[in-house]
Length: 338
Image (cartoon, rainbow, N blue to C red; front, side, top):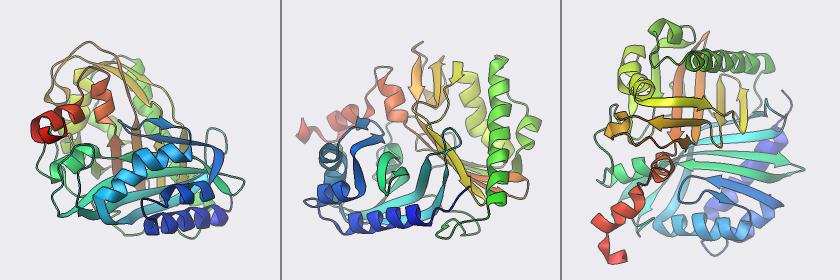
């Protein structure tokens, strides 16, 4: 755990200039703050992009044209060394907020205020950003405009709040001992579940969760699943449908995993591989093995995890199984684009 003030300042300066940029100047800002071999990872339909020009053209320009006067409203901002290889990363989580004035990804504009939930990971090397992982909740965005491409959520999706204690913006470096305690707790939780998966069990005893989770845990899941409060509700509304209705679950590791203070985060590419056997998301099984890109952001309080914000690239997971929810949405709700 080192001194991250320079990396935090770099990313905050980048965010500020990006927010002020027009669609015409976004590429200039990207070029200023990122390395020549910049690698950008995003959710479907964006996926991997290897240069600033295409990142600007494919992601930032359309989004800024659609969400007028877009603001980045951060709830959590932390930095740390990647546990895998000691790279330095900065993570920001919150919402992009603006007026939805023109269509985005074929989703019809409403002319009204909207929030796009995000988690962004930036790797810093030699004073520049060398990698970005930027995950947004497209299904949650669709639900805000009255479109739900999936059966009803088992949990409840809404515009999620930040940490209960409003202490997630760590612009100053946190105590290293506190940070390590958080990472150790997250790793214990991950190891518990990995060991359970290796047994082939489709269940999970609540006492296993209670080893690392508060009984009043809050799990803020992606649109299509929703949020749950308390261990019993979380198990009923997400964990058991996930465990009971997916087989061949394999953990593939993370691109980065780190902590700062009471917070920790990770993302993978992919984190998980699994096969639906029917029931998950209210959909039938197809016996197609598919990858899941997942983001987890945690808040620790004392010796337990209290809050967990999760993004899953569900559109990509479904795309691998032959269902393109974006294309289907355009065909049904916005046929003028076809």
